[in-house]
Image 1 (spheres, rainbow, N blue to C red):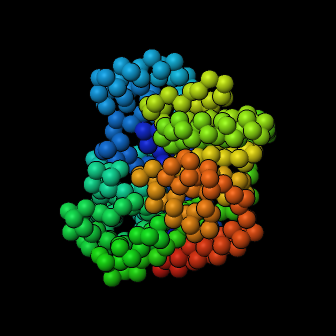
Image 2: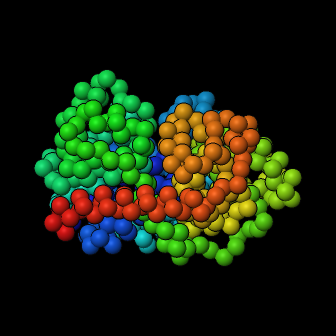
Length: 372
């Protein structure tokens, strides 16, 4: 049985470490169940202008003033982002099993026995400015197949316009699940198919599965700051924490076209690949982040960490950390720092083992229905 994985991984406007790793983890988990799984090399139309390799070109799309403001900065840092893109391409080529390239013009040529959609923000209406048909298996080549929604993230409730479409769109699936527990009851209102809560694919694997990617110590001792979006206040307070504990501060920047992260005296790493990103998290003395997947890998590597979220990332971070009874998170930096406490990983390990078994069981039962 040939199963296609539809998710965000290759064509985001920024090379995103979590997006690439969640697709790899889902494919590995399916392969271990005996599935002939392929990551669909799919580029939606909304990503047509995305270019993580040359981010300055993407800023042209966002307006002349923005382009001029970031032109010099992006040119100066362009070598870093080309290096980073090369590392991402190498990881994907070495670790993914992919299909040929597809977009809206040729996607009807796909020929799979079923599809697994997820994880990540494939159902986030804010991100897609509506929805993408492929991520709801709404093309002719996908309908009437054994399709599974595994841990897609939708963020907030859908608009009334999309709610009207939901019963039809969800009928394209034989099994449904969500990554955020808070949205399960809401989505259940639009379908008779049971909706379950499952964990992100990266959590389906234990830490040892990622150990093979870990590099020799890159820097030590240090605290790591990884921001998806600009947060100078988080960087400032993390730097103060580092000074008090006689550690240096390393900053990894996600979004090349955002405001400049660079603060004098800090080590700014803009060219890191998947392996380096994992290594910087694993070897950090403490992690400060606004990233959902940085939280996940901090948990897998049993790190002490603190998370700050904005409206776009709130639901996924709050749901994740609440599941593990971790209180070191807030929507503002001061509150997050005030909640810094030692994380009890004995308790977390027990919760993770239970959630992992439950989620793998959801996948296994529904994969068996495919006839694998």
